[in-house]
Image (cartoon, rainbow over all chains, first blue to last red):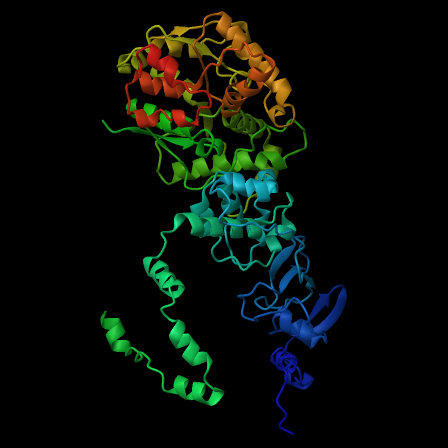
Length: 260
Length: 299
């Protein structure tokens, strides 16, 4: 039966474990990992994420892009015979024999609402919403926990002295996995602090783009109203035709792009 | 002659509320042919030196800063292993943490173990206050740089706690300090001697006990005024904040109180050296120092 899938079915399809159906005799190397204290034999070449699925768990939270970009699958683990608590993204970290691990699907952290246009572009705004940043003891535990290898402590220290630019730049690649905040002995929520700092830096320290301002003015003045009305009144068929026949820029040949 | 390059630790407050201290201080040291270089990466000094015996985590911050200074030396960015500090609080915290690890290898090892990509601290750094550097250059040399002597200006030096106590890190005699008096004389002004110059300003009590700090501010400033002071100088942003901003609360309980400006010593030096007015930074002073300075023909 060729029935159209519902959205939920499509999501379930897309997030199906890729290890389902592996035949045990086809796997040469095995490791034992401990998920929340229970041991499982899994193929050695899996990531933590796929190994957990191989063990039979189904993710309904704490799993996202599977590409190391979204920050959803934070893991905390200890390697065999090591005292250090390690952190990483489950989709980017390979299993190790004898490791103990648990997933951290969510970091409990308050995120105060603010109107960026009403706040002062000053360090006092950071202290108003996140006063705990002043508790930083520069232990650097956040930096050690960061799977993106960011200098987390440096950017927290930078915002304490009002350096929005350094904080914005140093935290730019943050994927908000929350591992810094979970490890911080001073209970700072670094990724939320950095987000506020980046927003303020963007709002108050970047020049307003002229073309955007001009276009917004044109929209307000109703320059495109007529065309919008025309498009919204079309049928699905007419719209598809219009889309297929739309004017578009030709793809740049690679040579000419290089010649530039 | 090329300028001698010193590492310079600014501290967080010099980047925000006490930006006028940094601006005037760097202008003055430049006029004295010194180049002060800020580390590329640094963190808060720890603010207050922890007195709890086993509280090593609070010494990680200052030692990490000293490691950054060692890195500057290793990379040939500076000519000196002595780091110059302006802020009295930072000076006190960095210097005491340095002393503690220099005298206690076990503490240092534990702190080094907490570091990440940094090299171990090798104990090669000395922490000095800007005022000590000025003393070393010589107050007679500073006098030579004075283009506009601060004649007839009565200046009360305020030391507070952090420059003098404990005596292992004090820059002068904790009972009878004179270093600021000598600097004031070199600038051509009159130093005012008054008993309250080394009394605590109330420090961080200013957050929860405004009135108590206002009481201390009243005592210290009226004591200086009774000896004829026009202005007070300090090198501590927290003392400056308390003595300057808390005058607002003093006015409420003592309406007869005459408000007076609180300056960083470097602001007065910038005037005496006749440097660009932009380096004075009076916009960040709560009580405007311009009227009294104008009345003495200094602006």
